[in-house]
Image (cartoon, rainbow, N blue to C red; front, top):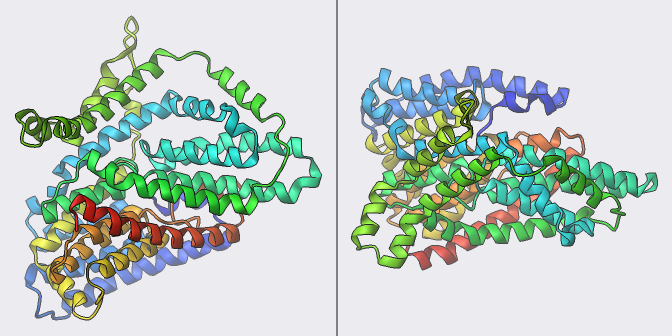
Length: 509
């Protein structure tokens, strides 16, 4: 998910906090300065709207990278300036907020809030950890935590998945340390670090597999549909993204298990997990209702694709379902059920309350709508075409797959310094424009930028799951950087090779 500097402030050292302050102050000066330079510098290749939008985007990008103000606020400023300065009409500037994917965000966020509210995520986690295979060895526990976090983050935000697994992980580590004894301190510290990193990295990897797993996926899907006319539905995304996700997870496990999964004593772990499961008791009415609504959402998300697979794309039922059951509509239907399924009809208590639902991540929704508007305006003003032609004129002689590799690398590098949502908003329109300027298929580079934007593994500030586990005090910064670089490199290779193999098979290249 997207993040602001305030979200991670409490886990930074005094030196890192000083750097964050300097970065923000630099942004407050550089943003307006870049805007003025670009605004008053002539660009003969651009029309008036494109020129104004270039200045606005220069300001927005500087503020996003430096996080001078909260990232969603910067996005709103960009949209407002576009309307005020005449780079676009008010209607066009605000059009991104009416995209049906906005409602997929809202619905899925409310469902995720219900899952967390009623403890369904913790029940699932403890059920997996209680399986004998996972609880017998340190590597087994590491694998279990990775699987749980990755699977959960497929359906709720990676931030929530990491936050959910952190206390469970700390509890199990306390049991392991007590059983290991003081002589195993060095081995325990290494193992604790890799278990924490597995929680953070597993959350980011799992989010790639489904459209709702992480915002860059939905941004990519929406921009591809708006800018190229190609619609990728829920099932098609999973068919494309699940194989690379599985490979990434396998590589992640190999990288982390080779570092600190030693042969420590695990006595007491099974008892701890059993005790925690006992505290949960039997399934509550609220848990059953939440599970039902989640099942309804998944069913409605895949139903149009299933109908196409069984009946054919030209069948009237398939056409009707595809037209009426957009993912956003399905998410809203499932989320609305949470407000009408009673926990206690006599007391008029329902599965979800609006007070709790209102706590969802509105910042990400604002950033997404603004990003769609800015990306669309880049194309309608001619700015994206001009910029794409300029870049394509002297780079990426490797054609489609050279551009795809560059787009993936661009997404990864940007996601290390700013939120993955902002990274996706910046890179995807640019690489689509470059692909069109070069006359190559735009989907592989757009998808490369999209997936690359979910890779931020080196630093605590790269992504909220990193910040969450760094805040445990169990992960030395050098360990995170060293393992993160390895996984960034591995992820780059897997993404590019995966796109090279899968896109032609799906007719996307």
